[in-house]
Image (cartoon, rainbow, N blue to C red; front, side, top):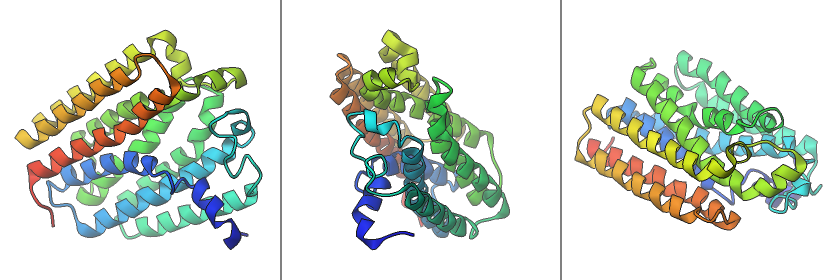
Length: 288
């Protein structure tokens, strides 16, 4: 049973007090909705997807902490989280996870059957990602798929089909997610090595900055290709140029691999996503 007295811990568990994950999910979802709707996305679809971003990101945080409840205790940054510290029980966490997923699914039922079918994959990705760091050095790829699955869902809800643009945008966001979550993983790398948790930051080693930079270049190149495909105008490309500038700044932030600066570089990707969306929205003009 959920307890009202534990509300502050539930907020901490779902990271509603730290909305960076919501932003990183929201911006690509809005990219997809605006492109799929050619600047005029359906209002109901938009509201459902924005609410779904908040709910599923919160659910993802819960299952992540459940999977890591015996690991987080040994990581300085996470040792005081509600689940690993024992302030709430595993049963409470799983109950809240199920409740958030149920509400999200209720919202998806307002969409077409294709979108409903795709939502099943979204739940599977959300539930399995946290366990990947035990088996592969590429958990960031699975996270990228989870964080990007709203893109094909948005196209399905808006147009009833998946175009080639939808899949290229999906791939673009997967690559972007791998890049910024590698920055996040660089923050915890010393602790992760000690306890045996795998990540791209560990896999890339001393090539981490170079590979992240390469991934960021690919993201920009793919966004330019998408712009050509949708016959985008100046504002779109100004947004892409602005995002490229944020990537350059992030490379400067991580130049010495200082964990706190790597974490700040990770957080800075919120601005990258927002600038891209601003360019897309400005290019299409006012919606609704």
